Image (cartoon, rainbow, N blue to C red; front, side, top):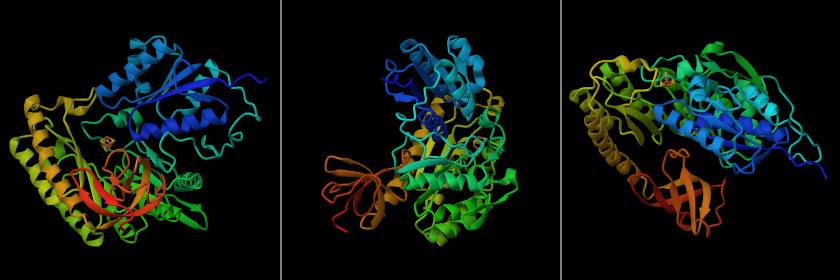
Length: 453
Ligand code: SF4
């Protein structure tokens, strides 16, 4: 009898970008012959991929490490909080190893030290890995996300210095992955059954600037390492491609025609954060609000189906009543489809902590409630306008008689859903596209029928 494979438990916290890191590590563990197990009890060692973005995430990460130590005892920590090893060591001196984000090799070294691999070519599910340089591994990654969508990380770090954010100090300046490497990864994902690619980074519109937009060959063409060329390449794969974390820069205009031509999902996730020029300046973000509104109008003239999602911070230090009203006016004018908002909370190490005139907590909460109510009415009206239309959807799951699906306007995990009431009867299956007639709507979701199309 061959010895059983060494067993690793994996806890993944944090944002979609951290999820991509987790997927890479899981892929490597799997290809080296480790078994991935679901319980602390079954695991020989536990890897915790942490988030260190805001204080509550730090607390959640420390709790997760504590739980893994109590339940299993052998714990390796990686991810954003790994950059602040002293915080982890202080709370949990017994962790075996601490590594930072995207440090796949160090995580694997720590796993090898704690639990040597036992490669058995007859038992391993995947063929032995073939390294393609830069630690890239051939073979489709084992994914934590459902099989039919995948996050595609195009760069690390960020060249901006938004005053409320510590990501540049945690992750450094922008480092783009060459376009051919990204396109090859996307190709492999699509070959492995992925039907929707979610392009993520800290700043997707800055993609390639650090590489001086280097041209690279892929297939029979040459593509520049820049957002538009990347989108053109991805459009060759014949699946949905969705852009996240786009900064509202003029060259974003270039991708709107691709959306109008159906090459790219008509969807932009642009964190505007605020609309008052003075507050945007304090946040160290571009402040041309009128230009932003004009640009949104131009985009919609070219691509009327464009969905815009955004996030905002209310109650930033110094925000006056009048500046908050400017923000509400912006919502009315911009008519965004999906909006998330946070009451400002200081992040340890962020420059904004030194700003004067903090907004009292009760005022922040009251503004957040008003902001959300104003946007809820807009989102609800924009969804109601879709009733009667036919939407292409991708099916995420079958639940009883229902199919739980998403339209082009809905990113997984953050946006709404399309509930298809006759999904099972119509033979819909997860990962497949379908056409659905929209019969109803509310503030978040659409309701429809596939048989009625
Ligand atoms: S764009 Fe601003 S908020 Fe986003 S990661 Fe960069 S510094 Fe942080």
